[in-house]
Length: 50
Image: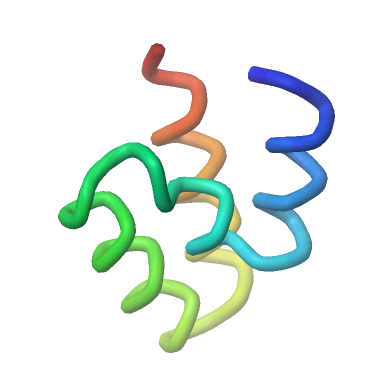
């Protein structure tokens, strides 16, 4: 997990996980629409699963 990805996950979470697949992107986008914090947490979890 690079520093750029972490920064991108904090600023705009769906953009940070766009290369992880359509499902990850949609889940992160939905959570970001519900609230910024759940979207950031989901993006960091998805990025940390490598």
